[in-house]
Image 1 (spheres, rainbow, N blue to C red):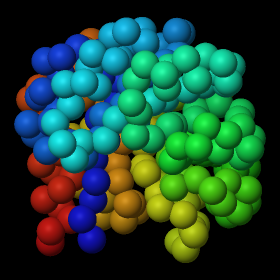
Image 2: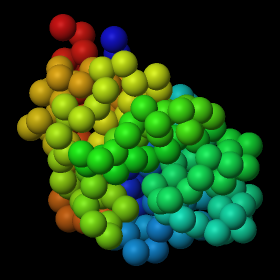
Image 3: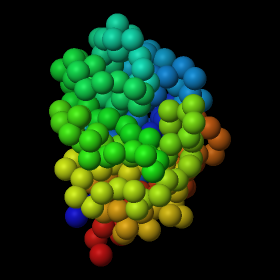
Image 4: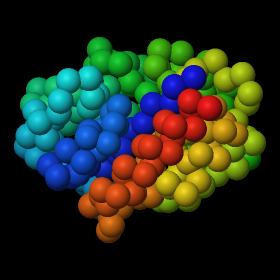
Amino acid sequence: MAVRVKICGITRLQDLHDACNAGADALGFVFYERSPRHVTIAAAAALVRALPPFVQSVGLFVNAEPAFIASVLREVPLDLLQFHGDEMPAECARFGRPYIKAVRVNRDTDLLKYAADFETARGLLLDAYVQGVPGGTGERFDWRLIPPHLPKPVILSGGLTPENVVEAVQRVHPWAVDVSSGVEAVPGLKDAVRVAAFIQRATSRAKH
């Protein structure tokens, strides 16, 4: 099965071009002010306008007010919404856009219940649970906590790097992998060499 790759936390045009040229399937734009990868609405609109065909734009929100999300959508033609907070299914679905729900996984997380509750989600993005931090921590969780027959596409996140993505794909068989801090030079700025290596290793492993 082909594995898709999302590069999250894009903040500048050069990183967008580097990721797209390396073969990224989707790019993530963070609308969460406490993140070092935060982008303004105006900056995100300019970046999304620069996307080539067939690369999806994903907007990441954390417990955002509906009015704020609506204001983003008026200016930024996002293909997919990603909810990374405590949003309920109806809150995620109210915008009439495809969405994915992020789940911070620990030993007490019932992923089968999440899949049932978020039946309208296109997939579940599985990230590491770190107290008080909604994501982007660079921490990895125990992949054995993922049920083998989860009835939603799995987007694997949390501590992925070019060095471990082959193992991740081999062990989890996710629909997609998602990386941010693992391909950065500094928080918010990507390293083109690491981006290219991550995408190459994630996708080439799927061919064997």
